[in-house]
Length: 237
Image (tube, rainbow, N blue to C red; front, side, top):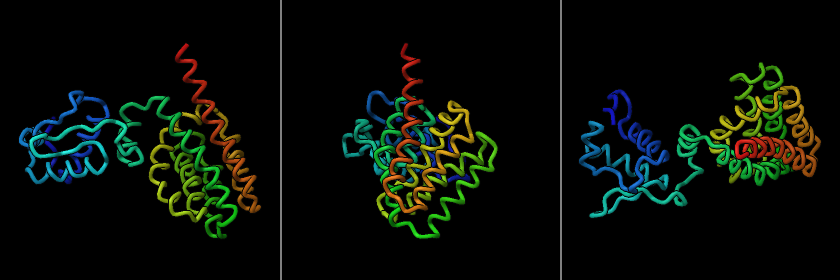
């Protein structure tokens, strides 16, 4: 492990490096180095190590107890809704199965958020969705601008739902969309078609038609899910 640069928050840098290492399975014996070893490996103080361990514990990755040391927790205890953890998963092993699971979560949630946006969204919130769609329309295909506008479209719908639980998922959605959109959009290879699919969602919301909004969003995500499932099937054959 390399020494951390002093011009960064040491604990946060440790969290980033250790978090990625845990996600990649580098600690298969389910134990991290001792506190003293971490201090030496990273060139930091014990207080920095303890703060980093607290951050990793809050993400469900490790536990630290007297005489037991720092242990990596089972994967089913990881807080995969944490944006950092999700980003590490997608950066270190962006498997199609991970993306499939993410799309399955989206298809269970975003259609209802769109329906709520149609029912409760005020004019300013709907205008934000429309602004994001216009940016998508004008952006070059598969560009950074296109990606950011697509993410803004979906996040704006969460806000328009006026449901605090959906809104709190914005970081999770935004983080994972950066990977899933960059994969599924080139596969589809039809920028105008993608924009049109999003336009249908917006139009249903503007028409205050919850059922149509729910259906349009379901179809949008289901198409991406089908692309991923087809790609998985090809790799397995």
